[in-house]
Image (cartoon, rainbow, N blue to C red):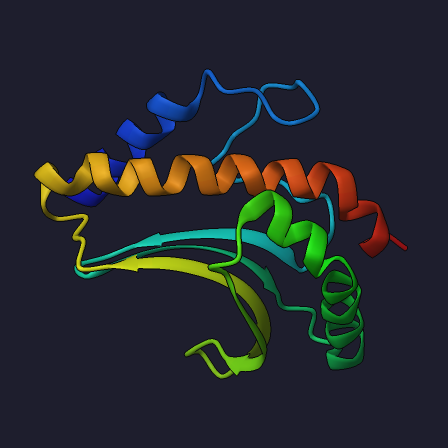
Length: 143
């Protein structure tokens, strides 16, 4: 129940923010417009993270997309910061290999309401900068 409350609260908090293209956007279920590429927000009892997750079942395509993003790593870091981890071909915990670009904070709990402002303050600028990057560079991944 507390988890649902957090995501509702966060969704209400960030809803007034327009996308980099000036449109109303569902930040929690961000649409990248590219199949098998998604933005993933996670928060649990000890960590909160934001990631771009590439999960194309065709590993060659997934690796190609990851390489295309690496070509824009300098621009990504200028917009989103340098604290993101770029991980190629990691197990997602469900037996699938994925490539991710992820940033996280530790020692925060979604179950601790007093830490929600810290988690929200982490998520909001990361998502906005990620959207800014995505609006400018997603074209490189579209076929």
